[in-house]
Image (cartoon, rainbow, N blue to C red; front, side):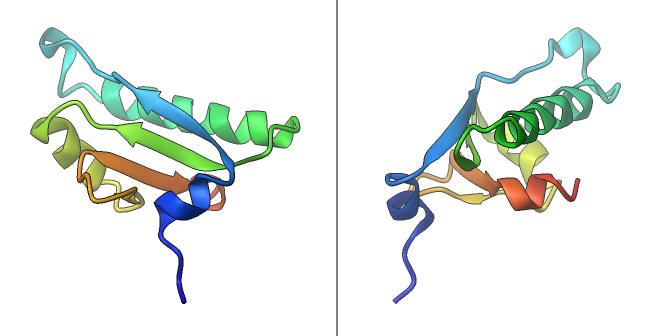
Length: 95
């Protein structure tokens, strides 16, 4: 039987990324992508330095943010809440 990501993560350490946003004045300039990739790479760095982490959980602010994250095609629903996403460390390493 396959366990849900939420069930497995209850037993593992993971990073939580919340409130990642770019001011409307600076949107559409690639800053959101650069900020997200930097944050995800930091999670990989922490894993390589010994933090026992299996991935990053994102608390999505709104529908626009959800559309933004879904463009990357690496995030999956963390639970029944579509505004909470998960990406495993091994996937982040490939970005």
